Image (cartoon, rainbow, N blue to C red; front, side):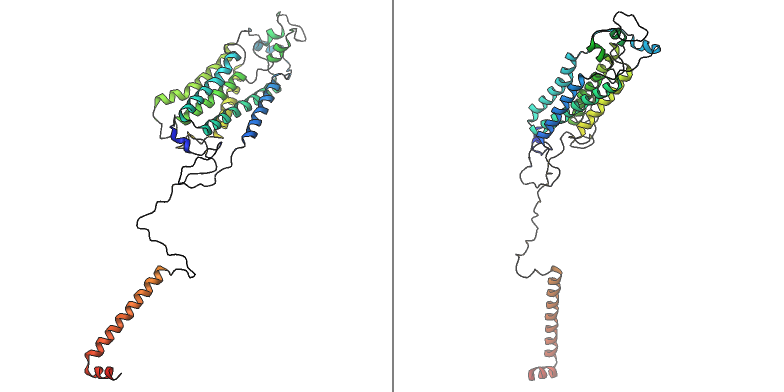
Length: 333
């Protein structure tokens, strides 16, 4: 984790914090926080609306029924467990870091990046689910609860909700949400612990701490194949969607891991510039007048010229005084 000193920096999501005596250089415009909030609320509403949309009814061939005849079981990681893991664990880490740094601007950037990933993932995953309409591995028992087939393969089950959800296997929502939430937490820890640059390399504890969220997300994804709620292709694609969106949203607010200051968000509209140190040997500039000051080269040249003329005049005077004839001429003159 970082020290409290970073609270003096200026961030992309907050107000200025440039130390006294340092100049500002234009860098980037401030984020429109009300607009960013509206975008995330809209994404959440779209995700919830897509949850109740009926999926595409894909035709099932008799020879592929074996793919969907797995037994119906309870989820190893139900939604009541998934959301506390995906939202609570990263939120706890963000809060602990804020209590240490007391940096509101950085916390705001982190929350904006994290919530953007969740919103985009929900909309993208549900849209693909509805468009593809792939049956789950236990769809046979959802469609034919009594185990009796008919020639037309028309479902005899009466649980409409179970039938709709049974055709939303691809991609896995548990996998995508696990990787977008816990994956973001891994990127967050990698940046804070400087795992990928010279400031933090070679420390095994940091590697383990940063990799634990990804390991937990992987186990959640694998559990979806063990309880026969998803095919392995569903889990793979869902995991890729989640990890890609988490990294994309993280990089919208944080620099690359190779950056020396990767633990800080992108700076707001200023970059601190060290003040100019005044040298004790600095020559005081002349005051501005009507005429510009003479160049040092010209001044030196004129001084040397005046001294040369003075030396020539002294030599001529000694020559005249050394000769009697010239002394008379000089006296006459």
